[in-house]
Length: 448
Image 1 (cartoon, helix red, strand yellow):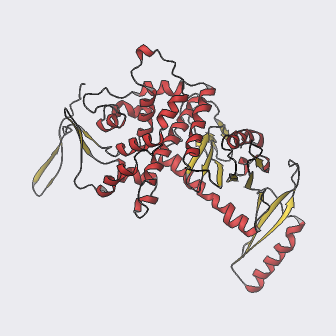
Image 2: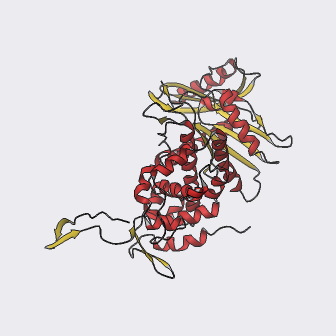
Image 3: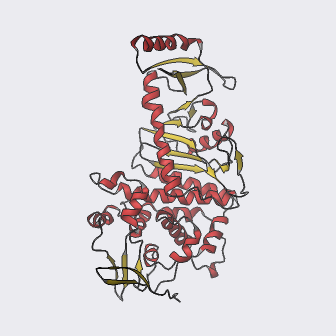
């Protein structure tokens, strides 16, 4: 391999001593923590599972980089902050990345480059992309060691701004941008991603989302498991209707979603007047109350339970409606404890979108952009697995992904390969040295 020679350069003198620098330190890496990601990936088996459903149509006699190695290199790069495939042109020879992908750091072949990864993203067909997407749904189901009594799935869409004329990109007047509006589904109780589906930049309709949710409920339909669908955005709950799993014995799936287009009904006028009057008499800055009614919109097939949160302030009234298929629980519990908890999904989308750059959907093909969402979601799983392995007493056990990247992944190391062993020499002043020492044991693969 030919190395470019970069001339030495200088920094300001310190205590009358000249400070010079040069890129001649040898086989160093600034991504020493990528080995933690490698252990997390092998614990989950994500690369193998993705490669199993990804058809390899290449000539076997000319294959240099396996699908598993390409998936691993791409996921590790995303976790370390290199979201573009172009970054692999430099990282392909990084000793830590090569070691994490199962190659010798000095004598092993370099990893794949950007053109190879671009061909990977554009290779699958529609059925292949669907299989890739639901491989991550299987990863979510396998994350439970035993069948849970209930799961709560939060559904939301987010604006993914595009720059160009990619397939499915549309102008959205609400965001005043040409964009995609991918649907994100999370198991927020465990902060786990379930599915991310690319879709056009228009408000999702009930029929469109219904197909995704029906397939998701069918795949995740376990006997005895109650599934609650909780919508964050107005348009992401199809028809405001309850769902049932595909199996006759599956528990009823309930839904909770906002309904901002509803107007106050006669049944809510009395509590509204009472709350507004009591606030004025007691001269309170704000007074909140709850009530419920039955409501039927024109597009609904029947009346549904509607919970109203009524808040009277010195500026006037603020009434919010939530439609639910739940028959139990008070109106206050439905709104404050159940529905308002859906805000956690927005934090998870922030991790996915801004800290793992899942909005880098710049491919021309919609299928290639969906493959990118799959790879970024797989990277989310790796970061989540590393964070879950941190002892709860440590500060980093609840840290965001950007903090984990800074403190655990982007650490300097010298990689030394000898005849009989490979040695990683980390910096002696590493702030998280004691934590990094214990993480490999916590990330060992689980037994059968």
